[in-house]
Length: 401
Image (cartoon, rainbow, N blue to C red; front, side, top):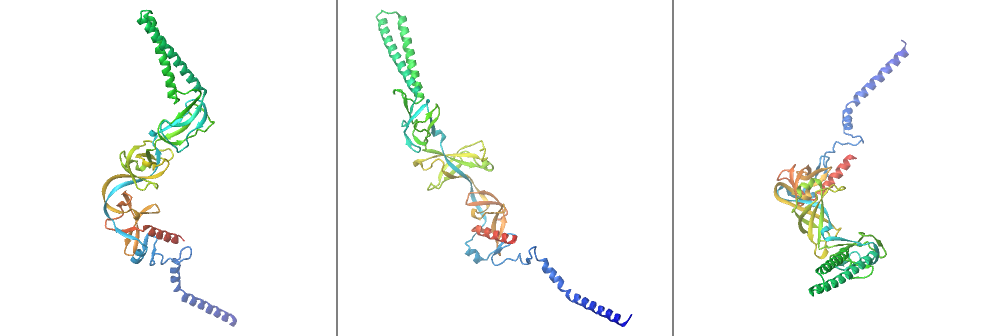
């Protein structure tokens, strides 16, 4: 080995020693760097302080940090969960309907033409008021038959009176009187039948010609009037519908899961935007068949309707009132919120609030019974809980980012 090779080997050893010393000098920083990197998420953000709440904020576990001053500033009212008397109230959507027992559909009595229409939809009519003027050859024929029957009756009555006088004078035989009496009776039956046919169809028996006026069979309001002048009609074709709106039906839709709570004579309170105050009634009927599309049953309340304040088709709300009972743990109705299909109440904690999952029981709209998840004496957000729900939603949205 010559001198030049020895110098080269010595330089290489020196470089290796320097590299080893540099690596040993950098080694203590590695754990700290690895620990820092362990706290970085997939986006490169440091999450070491993600669970540390700020002065006012929410954590992913449902806790919300809020001071007493912030609670007061946000208008959040606090109450203590405790016992209360609850009258169970079932809130249902409803609609005002015509009382079917007070509604009548007027149909064309014969085939013919509509000559004139005397009323319009919405008109208030009295019993016997004219509705539609019809013209029909059948009417002319029936009136002619009635007139012919009346003429035969007059003749039969004259013959009977004459035969009776002759028999009393011993001029005619008893057989002639009996025949005259039979003919009179047959003529009376024919006239009666002609009158009954016209009366049954609502056609006046005193008129003449081929026209007849269809009149209102009862007092009420004209709901529908499909008849128009010049329209050809067949027997049974609708001309108008009249309903007596002095009483109406309130029909509420009852979901299947609440059917066991509803019973006939159950007290009910009805409210609508057109009503200045609630009306009181009771359940008169519960349909035993569910609706094909809604899969709900119908509960009917019958109400008087002075001044026709309730109009068919009007939307309303029905509160069915159950029996009053004492509940050991209750909260205000506004305190209950739904988060991710969980029913929660925001319970006061030393640092703010916690979204506590609860199971509810009975409710009267103002207070709700808590059967699981909350103990009596717990302080909770009775009003303004929607603000806490919103804060929690913002926190979850930020955490997802």
